[in-house]
Length: 143
Image (tube, rainbow, N blue to C red):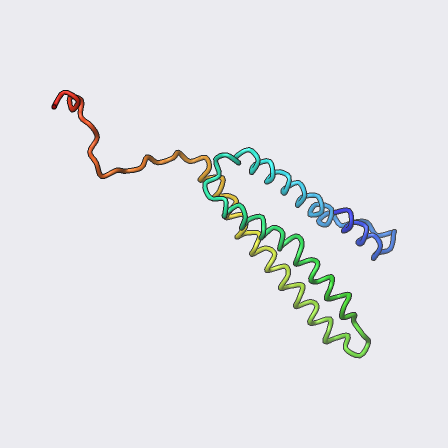
């Protein structure tokens, strides 16, 4: 988060204020991750399927870590030149759109697993159904 604020401030003149949406999202995601951590900590003994938790965590890592790093690496490895400014700018905007749509799609999918984990963890456990009939009241005296 701090790295994002520093890089944002370094790229823009000091007389420009940070947009409210930027500030909101820079503080929203860490707070959301801390809340999710506490929810998982609270239900750790009752988690229905730990694979759902792993899927959620890996998707969050992909969205908040790998997507931004990949776009940053692309910008550093392939800087925009004067000759191909239009081509690279259009490709970069397409790459950013893919990142944004992929981010929100994966956030939605990841939080489906998060919500399913919470719901299943707090639902009542169903009794297992057996094929044998329940013992009767006087079965012990039948012999």
